[in-house]
Length: 254
Image 1 (cartoon, rainbow, N blue to C red):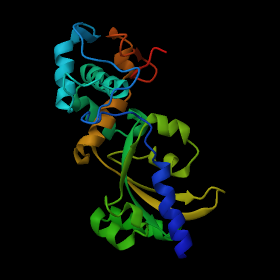
Image 2 (cartoon, one colour; image 1 turned 60 degrees about the horizontal axis):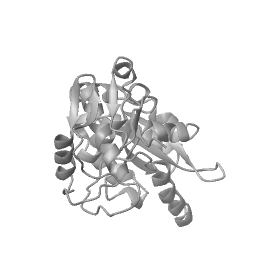
Image 3 (spheres, rainbow, N blue to C red; image 1 turned 120 degrees about the vertical axis):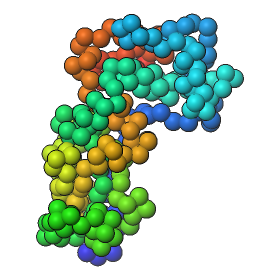
Image 4 (tube, helix red, strand yellow; image 1 turned 60 degrees about the vertical axis):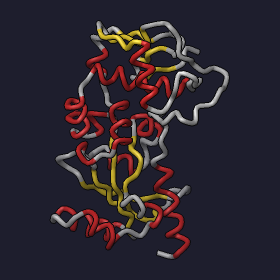
């Protein structure tokens, strides 16, 4: 592969994995903007059936993220925090882990490590090497041709249902949908803007126990809880928005 083609492949993979879900972020840089929520005396921020998120608990949750009672809290992080709490009431971490490890066809979210190689032949050889038991790190260091993913050892941001729906025709997304803890390795061609193949990606499913804290936040906020939602009575303080059962997220009222 020429240097130009290497550069194109290096630029392609991160764009496929663009992150569209608003997740919990530190609020130490919170700024005063229009349309923000502030701490108040109303007690129930949210409720799932008989379990309530009180104002006091919510303030502590935001404080743990870096906000103080003097901050004006941007609503997107506040909604993400409420979403995370609702998800945690609906389904516990062990259930989340089981759903996630069953694969994106079940959970609606997948986190991967990738190795970019020259072509389909190199991809097949790399898959075989991984399936033989050679460590991912050793295979990655020997085979990867994309320096842009080297710093994180091929780990890329988790793909959520929003990304899957928006990019359902991309071969990499199609291949990732087949992965799970039990079938953890796959490959797919990487295409340029004209649809021409420029490289191949070997992708490995990262199991729940191997996820970082940020990835766990994304997974917790993204798993499909539709069966739990069907029987749940959910309330959100309208200052922050409303709970959208279709997406499983707290969204703006407007």
